[in-house]
Length: 444
Image (tube, rainbow, N blue to C red; front, side):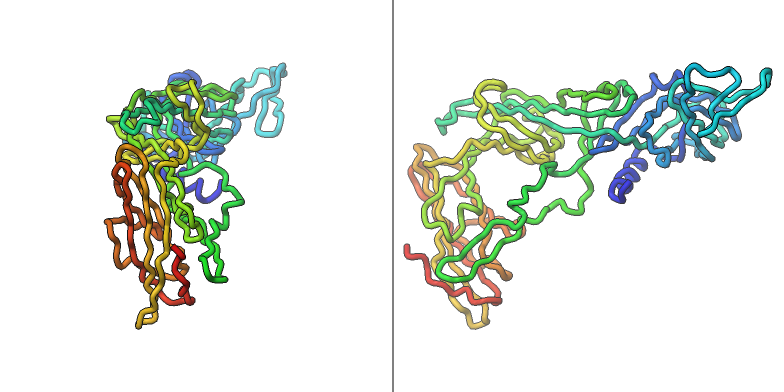
């Protein structure tokens, strides 16, 4: 088990109950209350079973543990009284048929004379014999926790945009159906399990073509440089946790799929997005903005819980009707927004213009830029403009014609463009010296 998985499991163990160690009985296996925390390649199981205990040291047989259990993680807890687990060993499944005087003991076969008073317990199900010490007597409920392999999960979404997409005045709404598929490679059936998923913020495999970031070539200079990919804002953070309702039966040696999120005709908003790739100074022509439909992850939209990342299908008119595109829904926390791309909008365009650079007496430089937005539609549109300055040294914004937000090296404006109107975002950057950025202004 790697260090990150051990840290994750340690946090989960602390979350379940106080105490330490494990046990179980044959009849209790089916009646146990079970919680599954499923990751990629593993699952942490927490189940509560009744046991007949007596004070002092005793041996208990824990049945129903799959072969892939990591017994080094086995733990048993009582909610009020500490329990000490002294030792454990796996009981082998006996060969069938077997001689009445032979029994398995570890990796050996032991002969016992006929008429002997005691014989070891021989089981036809996978089991573990635990030796523990406790002050408890009578039937008590104990929490049993252990780590399994052969588990994984994935999410899949279907979304449908309702309304007249071409008519900016028409309201739009969204249908969403989210499904979880859990792969259980063990021989154990988990009945009525409470499911928690643990994963990463984005489960897509990185595209090797994008590792170096996008290339920006400032005009009128021989300088070229590669911008690194946008840093992961979640790097080093605890893995996201997704609590899934309702309780579900997880069948053995198969994939169990079930719905966990559904909403119909949730009100949505239109948005036009200008990405940094459309605002590089090497582009001289006006570029179309991306046309989006925004669904807020809130309770009044029928959601309001963390959404795990997964593949998505987008339909127009209704789920299963006209497929618009296939894509990916990233990790979406409560209160964040789900963005549905509907393609470029030729009627709403953006153009970035570098007006010039001035050398200051302090040795730094001041760059002046404009972002020119144009709306040819018959109604006003709400936009979001994301710009990443091309300066490779440290910089700061000294002046902006409209309010903006800064996230790392990204500048974000949210102007509304009137019908058949224009909006110009003019801003100035103070750039620290490192190389000479003086270059001629754009010809237009």
